Length: 180
Image (tube, rainbow, N blue to C red; front, side):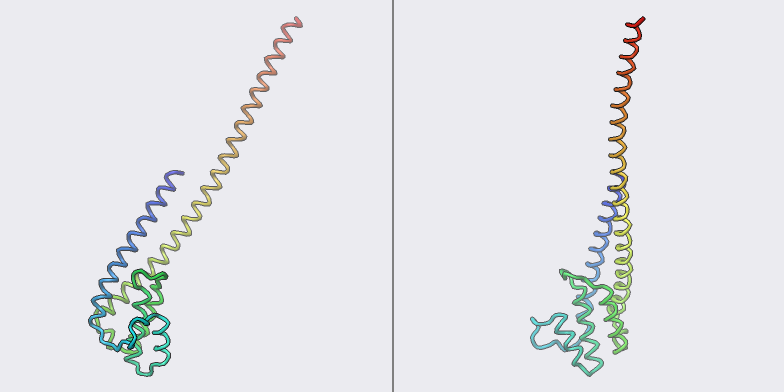
């Protein structure tokens, strides 16, 4: 059972390390990519967040500018320190942006982002599946531990019963010798 727990901890540690490595790679790509994409920033940069960008996306009519807003929103979805990283949402946004502005597809960083986010989405799904398997294994371990405890208790009771029977047998033999 300790091996199962150790294996689970090792696997979770590996997944955390792998996720952090991908986040670092994404950050480098994002920084390099943002330098190559020229788009209009909204005037109040401190107010840029996903909500503001979504509002701008709803209002924008120019497909090229709309694609830039969508790329910016995608970057916000995978920004380091974000409470809820949304790799699949960012991937969908990038694909939408490329459909609106095929010129973006020529930007190498966008291609890199699409590839990396696709892999991260797959890794997230795989990590989720591994977590489910881990939870199931933990549940099974708990059930087995409960069964072991129950069997140990029954074993103790049986030992007590055996000792009582041996004591009674000894007393019976002693009485039989006294009767003779």
